[in-house]
Image (tube, rainbow, N blue to C red; front, side):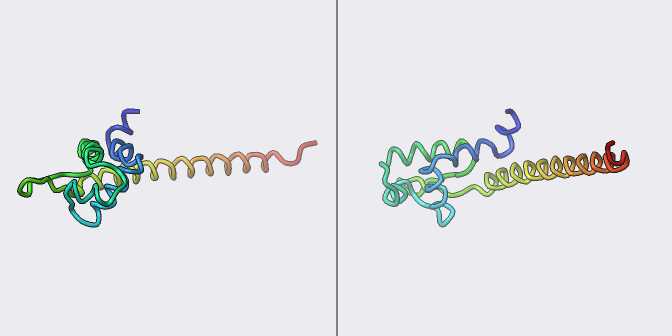
Length: 118
């Protein structure tokens, strides 16, 4: 599914893991270094680093050097990509639903024009 992998799909996949989602939600509240994130979660610092790597590759977080530590923050562009993906999928679903309703209405109208069966 190429579409899934392009517009926000990778970001949604990255957030499918509960630990990564918890890290991301912590970063939504405020930028944080790895050590602080590790103290907030029941996982090791190396595990947090691995999860951050996945989030970074998915375009959801960015980091910058602050002395000897790396501080991570949410990337607005990553959130925008997820929103665009969901908006497009929702729009497609609504269009398909409207087409199905229209088709059902037309079929019902055709049955009514044929009259009662003898």
